[in-house]
Image (cartoon, rainbow, N blue to C red; front, top):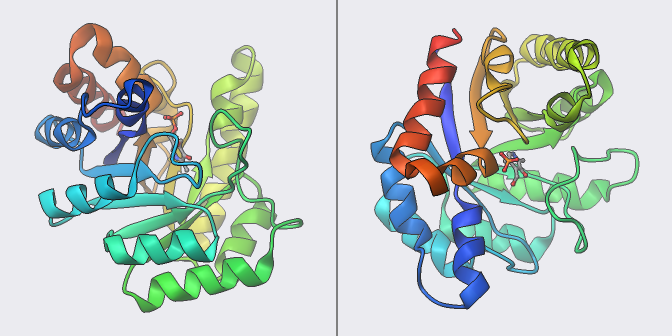
Length: 242
Ligand code: PXP
């Protein structure tokens, strides 16, 4: 099975918002990412609009006929905007106002189940593929299936941040187990968060992994190498890991 690279361009927008100006332009960055081998462009419209703005979504949709993926909270207002922007797929993520970035997968024990169910239904009815961002554990993967998702995106943050090779290997095993269950449940399998040039290969090697969504490490490297080189190196790493 081939594996896709989704590049998250939020941090290009973060830089633009720092000056409240028009540069650097996320849509221009997305164009370069695609020409360098990104299969999918990922953007997270947060409720606080700290980086991506609504207008960016419409601009991106105009630019690309395929491969636009949004991250959204399961909140009616955000889902309505998502549907208007007509992405190919949406990943529903937990979101809290004071976090620096998404803190992990959906907490199925605490979340508003009715809001999540309605969000999944509305998106699917609009013909938009739905993934749920989940921690690498069996109950979360099963819950995602129960909510009617087409895919799970497994959170790789704990793996990426694990201190030392032994702990990292244990975290990788959790991701592998969750991945096998996703496959058994017929869920498309994605992964992402904190993946970088040094830790991506073992995750790319997981059978049935169909897409890795990566943002920060690529945009950070692009400051030194340019965006084209940063994206094509990541693409090379994930393809050659197979
Ligand atoms: N996947 C999801 C669901 C995310 O929320 C994020 C961060 O926006 C990413 C992937 C990308 O994470 P990173 O920027 O750490 O590569």
